[in-house]
Image 1 (cartoon, helix red, strand yellow):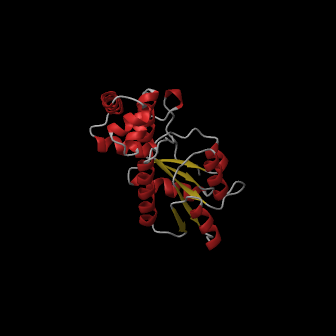
Image 2 (image 1 turned 90 degrees about the vertical axis):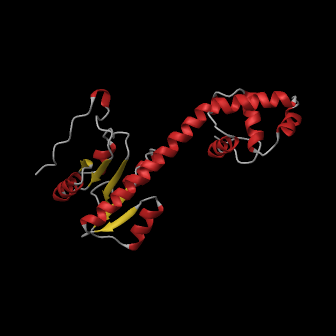
Image 3 (image 1 turned 180 degrees about the vertical axis):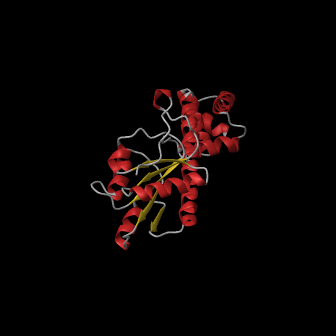
Length: 225
């Protein structure tokens, strides 16, 4: 028996689908097929692999996803794969499945960032619930990362003086205080603040402060990005 055929990649090495994908790694052919059919029955895209190296050697589509991973695999184990993904800075939420789970193994998996650990036999709905939660977790992570990347790009468009003004605004200083701090006229500070608001796309001072906090400018005079 073989796995269900996988759709070919789109030109340029990218998958045509942008729907959430469930990656499955299990050396048991019948389990891979059962999991693939289960996820597809609820409309989820699936990519199944028979080993950890097979997944690591594949070009995974950069879309919202999660990984259903057998913890006991020949060669590179599920825990080893988890460590390799972490080293590669790949943050796919992992749901471990095993027929031989034990407490130390569970603790290690969860401490390393796994979102769930299910012992076979598990109910289909139990696994589906875990997958839905993992996909939502990955979706939110990606949204946060996109927001931060966009803010960093906007911050980079500010001149050094505008960045200095933004840092002092985030520290809670008034225009007069900022002017004294930077040796500028107060009207000049107001002009700089206007430029900062416009370039950052801030609708209000509160909006600008929230952006500053996301960037790591938290009530101090330095920025950490």
